[in-house]
Image 1 (cartoon, rainbow, N blue to C red):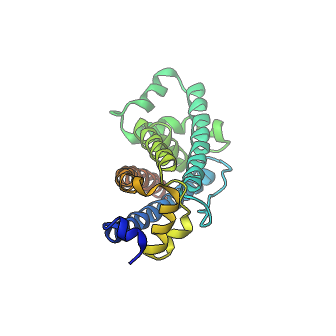
Image 2 (cartoon, rainbow, N blue to C red; image 1 turned 90 degrees about the vertical axis):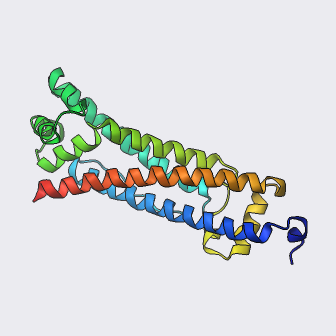
Image 3 (cartoon, helix red, strand yellow; image 1 turned 120 degrees about the vertical axis):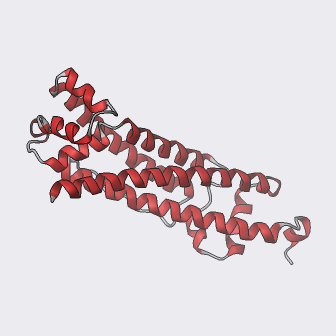
Length: 225
């Protein structure tokens, strides 16, 4: 039995718990890298963006990887803001307001964007119009993206943000030792509880983010048929 187990009898159970939490976090991080790259691909192909794909740094910390996704999403938001400003500039005020109206039919919104998308992008495709409507004309999507950024920032700033991603693929004892190296032993229980809370929020935000991106890609596929 390890010396820490004598001082803290619940450590063996916590080892299992921490290992499970970290594996879930790794899965969520990986999923968000994939989803963000999928969104980047759609924007590059249909809105003429030149965004670089991102890659998970297996040698980096949780915070560093969270920051990578945050930076990529912020670049995406800047590109979407450019399209939004162009739409606002080219469309009549009444038509632009319709894009923001959640009661307006999506097909109508796509038709509205189709009127000016060629001026903005240099070409007109229904797929490009659909992407613009899904990502620019949707306050719901904007809120989902903002929520993900907030949760990622909270995870990066948490007690366990300094843990290296690489340890997630190691054994339970190695993960536990890494965490003990990052926080005081007396903080461990609080850190685990805090991490559980972040993970719940992260999963929820990630699921909504992935769903929003899937809706975009499905709409694009439908428009391209």
